[in-house]
Length: 272
Image (cartoon, rainbow, N blue to C red; front, top):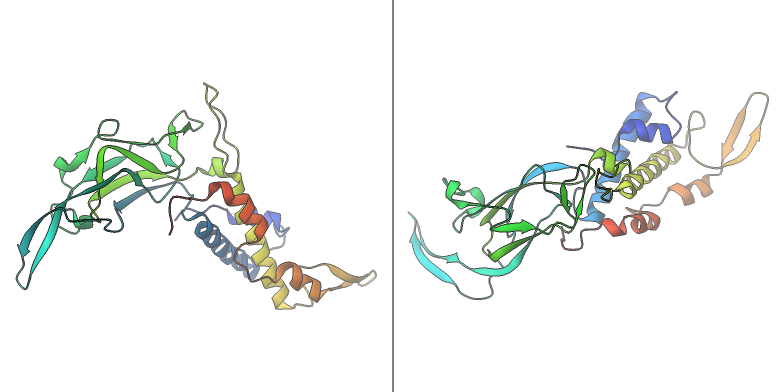
């Protein structure tokens, strides 16, 4: 799975690049995993650029009875609703949606989230721009359209039976965009700057590494924290343990400063 932060970036920021041990490298790698997990949970999506296959709606949103038939299996009879509609908007889980590579969307009112053999066949394919379209609102550095809110619109009503829509799409930010290094295209369109996400992961990684170092209570080697005393000669120093714990020992998943930094990237239309 793609990562927001490269371990070498965290190691450099922590000042360990020339003297890191295998134990410290393992601590950094684990801290990145935890920091990225915390950021993704706060954002309510995975911001790394990936191709995704998902089924919608996630829940049966029917408010009333629609067209239905009776079906019989080898063990039971049951009623199955065939067709119903609820809204012209469909909310996807991951953002931002990218127009390139092209999205593939199929609607099968008996799709059963792909569990039925033969579901979502060629006859169920819908055409973007005619049957549906993403709510594109900006461009990336290559001039491709981007949908920030993850909403797909339809000429008609989307089905409301769970698992009747299959969509394959690309969403997330590139490594360049996560580091704020994107450039405007030839037409001068705005760049996508997702560097606050990268910064939040970096700062949360550093905090978690420093927490571990403080808890180790090592009298030698690299330990995070403000010095309370220092002497020359045979060099030695001591760490203000209480202050270190106050700085690095918090058990909160994300610091308030990082939440503020990430606020504009939160997927407000989706609740994981």
